[in-house]
Length: 124
Image (cartoon, rainbow, N blue to C red; front, side, top):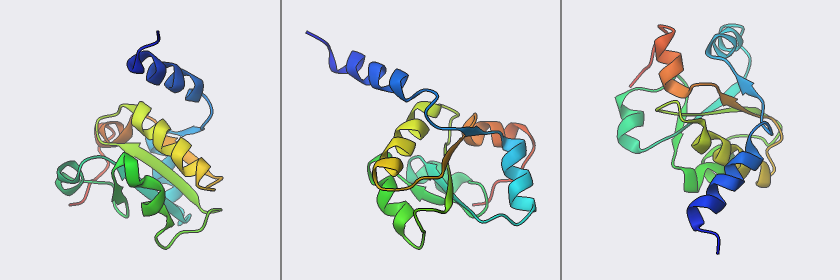
């Protein structure tokens, strides 16, 4: 019998490569160029309040599709990221968003941790 953990790992392996990643540098360039991007931090509320990328909204993994729908369009570009750089939760969020009809989803490579390591600002 397969354990729930190995099923989750298998699912994550299937998700690898299905969503394009965006680097912190590329995201910053898009923001500076005025491109309309919806940012979603998939984290706990405390992590989000401690600092997030300017303009990001907060969502827990289980409610990410609902959070994205607030004021957004399914064709709008979404960038999802996590607070600790673990992209597995971001990929799961991307899968959830795609199932909800969002077609243009990117995962921030390295998450908020990579953003901060480049010296880019976070807001609270």
